[in-house]
Length: 301
Image (cartoon, rainbow, N blue to C red):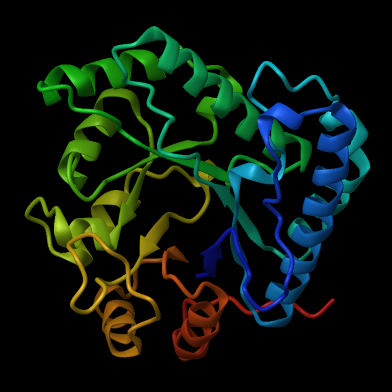
């Protein structure tokens, strides 16, 4: 079991997702920005290793505008050595990396233009993970997408468009239940049709359930992962106390997290904490998970 958090470390004081306005794009500006983003990513990963946080979600903005036609900089070549060094660090310390494209990635859209842009964005994510030299356990998670008044047709369209994707994308893609449209049961049906692994989101299941309890849901989703996919990944959070439906908590609910670990034993999983205070909650979760036999500590090197 590895514990992680997404995209931003608030303790370090740098960002691996720095960007700039599209109107001010130049290859030089892009390379300058990516260089700083990679420097910060390296710093975040070293912080995480020191704190036994072995799971991290890289933000989509590591290479700004990478899927946009304006991007002409050969970033994969320019930063090949740096990306390889990051990959070597990740592999050496048995860390895990994932990515989660923004909500505009919708492969079941009715508009061909949206599909085209979505596929371009997925190609960028896959190319980045390939450039870091990570195997297919480094996953890209997406949602099913829109409903368009006909969820059955929308799910079929997802399956059809999925089958047309590049192999470089297919080997990494996983689908996640969401908080209002597609439940875990819907994602499991899609898995039965096309074989895509299902990433279980605990919080989304809480607000958009489909019958199974959390422990059963973890088992059902976990069974969709093949050995080549690595340990099943899940997203974990709790609701914001007194907040609107669907809003994530600001910090880890220690008691709930302890109950979750107890309830889901012995199922193995890598846990991404989608909680507002990022590494602060990850540190608390690691402290709790140390008492769990599934938890993985970094090896001495």
